[in-house]
Amino acid sequence: MEVDLKGLYKRPIRNAAGDIKIYYYAWRGGPRLNSEPGTIEFVNEFQEHQKRRFAKPKDTISGLILEYKQSPDYRKLAAITKRDHEAMFERIVMLCGICRWMRLKIGRCVASLLRSAIRSKATGRPIDFGNPCAGCFQ
Image (cartoon, rainbow, N blue to C red; front, side):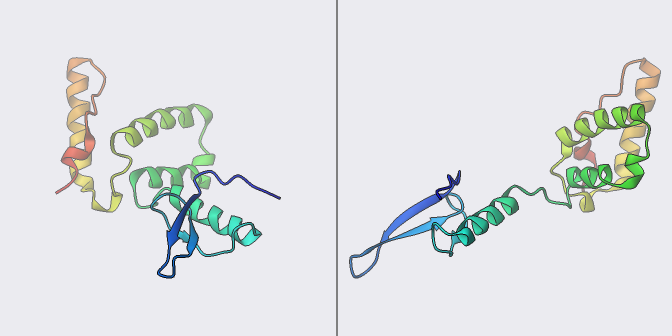
């Protein structure tokens, strides 16, 4: 049985004796696959490397949001509340989803958002979040 492994990179290398040996990698510049090509172990090893490659880090803001969305507290919310949360989550992830949440200065973020809310209430325009990460870090 032949399986097409998308992203698999094979590199022929000539050794000192002049023989050519083919090395397989999970992707170009990725980790080398040590299993024998054409075996189930090879496919499993390739798939494990691919899972780790595309996994989202859990210590980012987007990871924190994803963790909250999988929690029982989020599942208990009403449909309208979830819809409103989704809109805000998308905006937050777009603006600062890759930021590490442990480095955030929560007080600065809250103060920045409160200033924006007060300004928007006074002017009657919606809150312009801009780039919330700019004021959140040291």
